[in-house]
Image 1 (cartoon, helix red, strand yellow):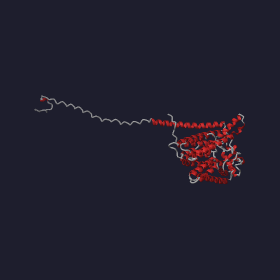
Image 2 (cartoon, rainbow, N blue to C red):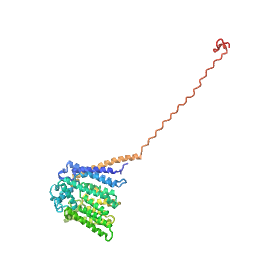
Image 3 (cartoon, rainbow, N blue to C red):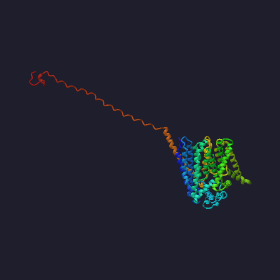
Image 4 (cartoon, helix red, strand yellow):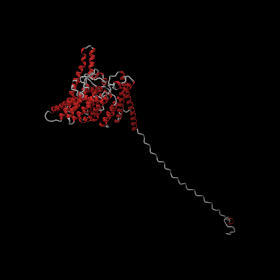
Length: 527
């Protein structure tokens, strides 16, 4: 009888995920977003083996994450602390790997060096800097101003000044900055879950151990880790008794990447709940706005970047971006050009405007439904809508919403968590480790490496199933107990021999009538 649902222990998931992470890191040394001078030829043996190993490890890592999620909902679920240790174990091999799935970390370093050189990063792209860092930036972003806020640019400037022109040291420094953001994220998840009545173990599994966190925030060193870490800390403070601290931290998160500003209304609403008297909401809004304005002025003055970031928020997206609205715009434009229609060039901007309108409508609906009981959950849904309906999307953008949905969704809303998990698993497979679009050969290699990972998992499953079947058969038909040894038969005592027959008496001596002939008569006797 085949076994369809095998018991899985958290320790098995830990080792399986560590194996996948190690294989991914090893493959990244040949197929990752390497510096230009270290990158092998795309179709060399080294690059082929590296890409196959990366996707082999990626499949194992995804399987370990999915199986661990099953144990997190079971009766013997690991504690949040054990899940955090699992995250550290899986992230360890990626810390020493080259950048993975994106070349944005080189852009961060170039922008930090531009701040050090007093070049306006909101007016010029990294090409203005020149030097070895500019050569590492993806060509599409070399002439594009940065959309990031002064808080992140201050961090990038400090790392670039420390690393000087050493690219490897700069990458390691930016990865450590991202790692601090990830650590702050995962430490805030249990606290957010407890405040919002969610399960802390599920929150850590979906929001912290998410493969997108490992691949793109740790492996890719994206600044979204810093934004989400500050955002989570600010919301924890606002849910507690420090609304001013919450407003400051959320504002700092928005000065890394602008979408975090959507959490400020939640901070104001949480502050209004603790106030009494006249117009508590108005006073909470004014206090939160004042704290946010003061934080913005202070952070911008310390970074020395000016306020150009407000105008750089409309930085154009890449023409090949595959967001929903961009894809629909390109398809509409192609259809209009095929029929010879003139306004085909306006298709993409029109869809972007439609996406913006849909985003605003979705945010309003989310706040309408959840602002009274679950304002932080409304923030998570709003950030998810911005990521999905915006003009540009990257796999790690989805973490904006997933991070908060994992910790604040009601316990009964299984659908929201399930959708978040499925989307995360799918997006983990769609970007190549090099960060570039693949050709047909690279797609085949990636499929081959993934197939090897699936076969390895299937073989492991079959071996475990056979062992479980043998155990079940043994329990159903236990072996017969050994019969007790019979005592040896009693040896009867030997029977007494039958009494011997009496020996016949000797015949009496014959009687002689003639005394002279009696042999016993003494001679000469006359008697």
